[in-house]
Every structure is written in structure tokens, then in C-alpha cells.
Length: 55
Image (cartoon, rainbow, N blue to C red; front, side, top):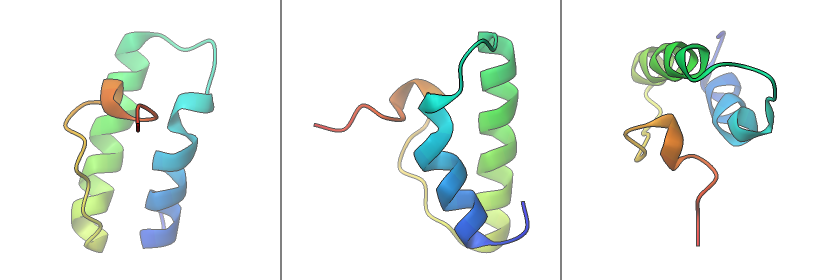
């Protein structure tokens, strides 16, 4: 990830990715969390399971 905008886009599109394992999703989310911390992006979700589940 190259900037905060890329991190935010990855979070928005995360639940649109198909045909990947839960293990792959876990790894991707961890990487997004690390990038978010690096670029100062606040993430409320603690798990990839929480993404896309907004009321």
C-alpha cells in the first residue's frame, strides 16, 4: 500500500473479493491494519468479519 487513500480503498473493497480462503482474508486484513497504522488511518473494525456489516 502506498498511501492512506489506498488503505481506505482496500477496506471499502475488501468484502467484494471472491474465491479466497479465510486464511488469505486474515493475512490481507493484518496487512491492511499494518498499513493503516503506518499511514495514520483509524480502523474501528477488529476483524475482517466486521467489514461491510454497517447498519
